[in-house]
Length: 106
Image 1 (cartoon, rainbow, N blue to C red):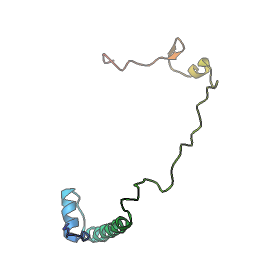
Image 2: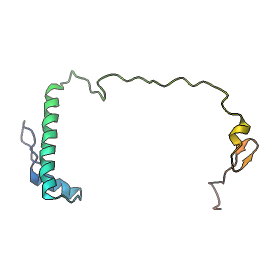
Image 3: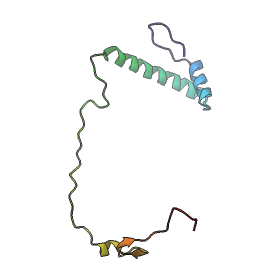
Image 4: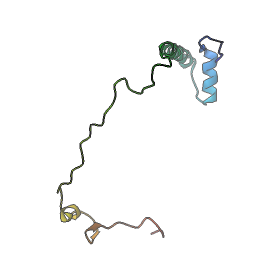
């Protein structure tokens, strides 16, 4: 891609082929032609946004502020220990018993 002073960079088929080579992506001639137009369109849209996004416009990821909509945690009796361990393949002292993952291989 060649950049000119004060002007928008232009996407050419040659620059798309070069980028594909750098990324080690095999593209057909139809794909190169299509990507040239698509990337050119993307650059035009970015340039349009850059025209209106001045220093007085704060950067945002969303146009509307997001807020956390999760509920507060509340302690509740859902299962007894016995119910939770009922289908466990192995349990001991009110806990699930599993193979050790640290130390010697089993």
